[in-house]
Length: 164
Picture 1 (cartoon, rainbow, N blue to C red):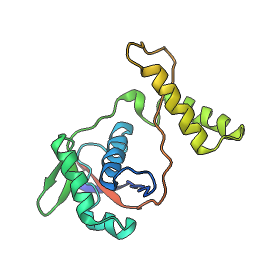
Picture 2 (cartoon, rainbow, N blue to C red; picture 1 turned 90 degrees about the horizontal axis):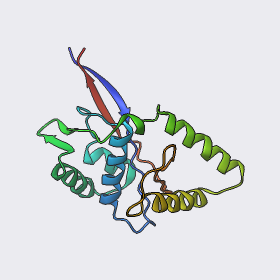
Picture 3 (cartoon, rainbow, N blue to C red; picture 1 turned 180 degrees about the horizontal axis):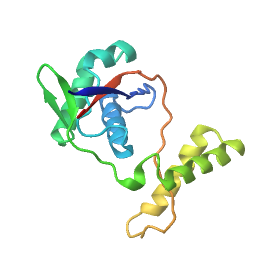
Picture 4 (cartoon, rainbow, N blue to C red; picture 1 turned 120 degrees about the vertical axis):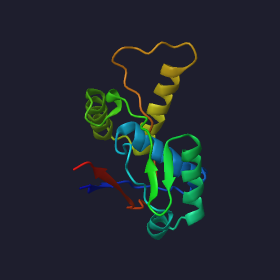
């Protein structure tokens, strides 16, 4: 008997970012794959579900899903939906990793120092550029992550089937 577990995936579309909505969906799906929020077998929200909660045209979501399919990350199953084929996650990128805990602590310090989300994003982007510039060797203990300010969560969900 297959048991379905609902996993929340929220596509946050920032219409002021200049990044097309379909690319934002692709980027956010890849981020969820890296963080282990989405794993192989999970069903992505349907284009209709995304449209209902985010006012994104269903064709925009379908375009994003086709891009993810071209990259071998998802696969459509006629009559069932679009499912995750493979993950981008590594143990050190999960939200239960020590690096994540250190990053959360750093974010708390930054907020306590009065930094706005945009200030933190600028600092992180600058540190990433410096750390990962051509020829730079990663420094042990360094923390880097991407951060984007966005608005409007879709509240769309994906389902995960367990083998029970």
